[in-house]
Image (tube, rainbow, N blue to C red; front, side, top):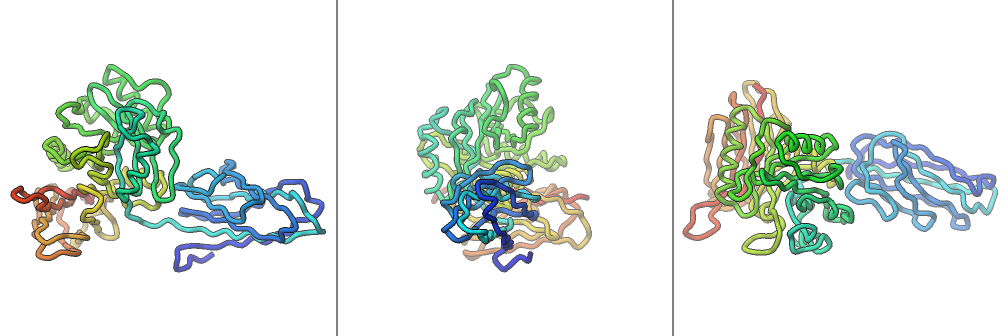
Length: 425
């Protein structure tokens, strides 16, 4: 197979079902290549016959069935056609399950056309921290989803406090990936546990640090992403410590930007300078509408290989993301030697780090920082796109921030903060 200009491959299977096979089911194996985001299956035959369609995956998981009513189905982790599980299209040998329900002649030719659409690096925007009426929010899950869509978000993480019942009815839509989550909410700090409908068995309440670490590590071993929430919040700071268990991300921007977020960014930067590599994210912590409190304030932008939950969470873990004050905001990327923000690059003399900014406004202030402090500060003279290239030195990392005059009479405010690109020295 050859990838065409649309990033797809097509496989054709021609078979003949004989009269003596009527009333039986049989497998038609076919190979799925690596790096597939979506698989479409279409089949055609003379409708004087009846041939049913079902599907199983490379690990022999039953994916679904549609009888003979539909000639086209598709499988994708973000959304599959009705009657089929939304799952990753993993490489290996899959099976079309053909059902020879009615064969009216000696044999019938059937053609199956399978189209593979490959993954590609895509920028998606979302909110990693929202609540519903399953805890102390004011919107139901069903009300929250159109609200997130109206903010032009591509994904949301629903993170109600200390329970998972809200995760049971969750289903992705064509334009929104809905990631299940829990905000683990205890007196010594909060953490989001993302990606599993039921991350642990039993209750979430513990009293000692040892119990807390055991619970979070168990959820992480089960495949969940663990993010420390608003660690410097005045009302519920993180008191469990940072070095006794592994966490995946730190929420440095919670809701409308405030002093506790500034403290968190300073703490995070100091940890980076010590050699720690900690991906950052943002979350609105939305409960109810108030002054600028809404899903997507702030927005976490993710360079993901697909809209699927697995790729989105992996991209967050890898730091392939940045945070902006709202969904309509400047966007950016950092590249170095074909690597991107969140990646680590082997240092060598002559390397350049390239910062690309989109939707910059006149007067925006761009800061480029490293483990040595402020490397460069630029005030944009025009609106539009901007590229800044600097020669890499032996620094642990490079990252960027963008500030903008949002309110007359007030100093420029932080509108964007990136994860670093790291250098292996």
